[in-house]
Amino acid sequence: MSQFFPFRALRPAKGKAGSTACLPYDVLSEAQARELAVNPSSFIHVIKSEADLPEGTDLYSDMVYQTAAANLAKMEQDGILCEAEAPEYYIYREISADHTQTGVVGTVSCREYEAGIIKRHELTVAEKEDDRTRHILTCMAQTGLVFLTFPENEDLSKCIAEVTAQEPDEDFSQNAVRHQVWAVRDAEMIRRIGDCFREIPSLYIADGHHRAASSCRAAEKLGADDSREAGRFMACAFPAEDLSLLGYHRYVKDLNGMDEAAFMARVKEAFDVREGGETLRPDTPHEIIMRLGNSNYILTPHSDRYDASDSISRLDVSILQENLLAPVLGIEDPRRNKRITFIGGMDAAEQIRALTADGGVGFVLYPTSIQDLIAVADDRRIMPPKSTWFEPKLLSGLFIHKL
Image (cartoon, rainbow, N blue to C red; front, side, top):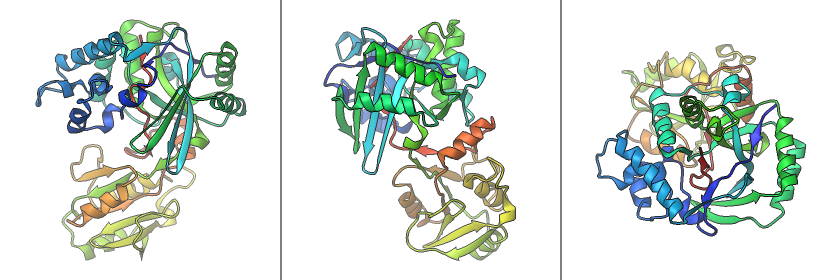
């Protein structure tokens, strides 16, 4: 059973969502943040407040967090952000050129996260947790959504369809994505949505592991259980069938001291290799496109190189890591090795093409499936780093959860 609570969101005033909301803090550089900060209504002033401070400011200084809190308070005081009068759910839809996803925004229990009812598939980094925990405690608010998913629930799908048959409260486009929001204020619909979630055995973190972990650390510091807002964290939950995963690709800047002929001989020990066409896009799982020099090669692992019944071993990211990146290229710890770069996003394959023009080798992978993500989480295991890339990203500043 999953508890999914309505809450009194702090949201942009009517008609201001398009100028307030922005991409999340972890996909924007400081230079991009400073460009957005020209707009006084942008939520960038809260999630990357260093944009309001002198260049070179220590990103983890007290002033950064204090500025974020002051900016959040000022945006509410100035009427840019307004708090709902009563607890509500929100339906959040994103429409890109080839994909639509529709989720429910509410809050979930830190206790259920700790108990494993909300399942994870990724390790977190202590320094990143420290940063977001300080941000939450200084602002006394959660400013970013955790991205959850769940297996299809027919009754919940009906609720979403009924709500979205009405005119949205917000409807705007940003970065080639259309964003729509419906506030659910009807008491009966709120009850129905809550009942639907109670029928769902588990929720799965698709993206936002650090936001979830940091929220729960903040709850512990505040001594809050899930009877209080501080004991819950804000999330948007999407049906699994709505989600679109993209490949998360790899570029290694050298061949670990080998020439191309020696390197190719080592690759062929674990993979069947055939020449590829011009397109840097695998057609199926277990098909990895390698970009070397000006040529593309299609790598297919030998069947004895992975265990198809194992939720981790069968992942393409694992096959590549265990059979090529570690033994051939010497990338034993991809989290820390400076020779490897991870590249996600719609234009990632073209970035690989550009990087390999100057040397090194690139690998373009077929997307990890949402079913594989769920299988790993159900097994209570951890995916290799940089296994999944979700797009479009959930905007920050559309919903804020005050503690």
